[in-house]
Length: 174
Image (cartoon, rainbow, N blue to C red; front, side, top):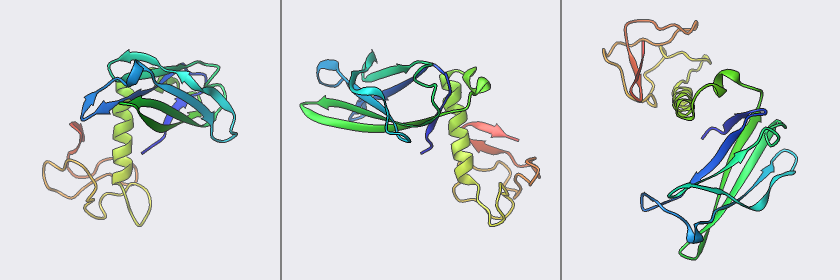
């Protein structure tokens, strides 16, 4: 799984959804706690035991401020809550990177779609020559398929060769 990038000085939420048997569920006492640590330096960004904000059933978040995201680096979010008296813990990671004005103009849903496409395409390309060369072999990890069965792909300039459409989760790339 890719680590979520957060632009430097951005105001962004980090959140958690709690599912029990496939259904969003609130924890005991409707309380979720978190702590955030800079993994590179060990410095505490948000003290452990900070109460997360309830958003909707099973959904909790904490809003990072521009001050929180001012220092670039790797961060670890440690979540804690209880379900039926049993303690549950979850660890998530994010990285504060350079400012990304185009990324910040996207909605959260658009960001999720873009990140999903990049992740799937990145994990689907492999070549002994290096780089995104699809004409070498049929890629077993490529999701969806082709609509014409022809063997073509992306050449070294990044343009499509042949007449094949590749489907990525309902998005057609010509």
